[in-house]
Length: 145
Image (cartoon, rainbow, N blue to C red):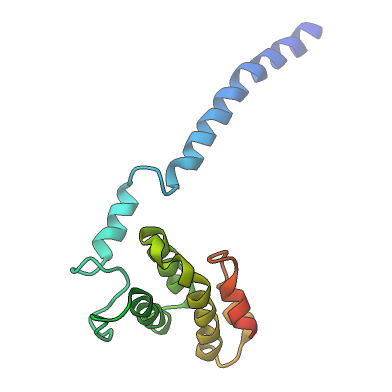
């Protein structure tokens, strides 16, 4: 009996590190610094022809606007056409790709929160359900008021 327990312990001691390393490696394959995968290629392919993400052909012309104002227009268009979650994804991606937009992130996320409440006719619970930790929770603060 002692030998059986010892053998099981040895087996676990040898296989557990392999399992942990393998699952840890798989867990970090979808981080921003990882090379693109096939799914990332699909996202890029879904962007518009001029390289801007989230802008549809019916969106207002934002040429000549300050970058943060153009982003605000894109975010509101995304919120109107889809949902606050996709708009927050667009905001997060835009700030990651263009760090000079970071100072405007909390303001933009707050604006999205207020617009989400309007979109859902004052239903705070539904608007808040899209909250994410983008820009330190400014979206949730915008939903509340």
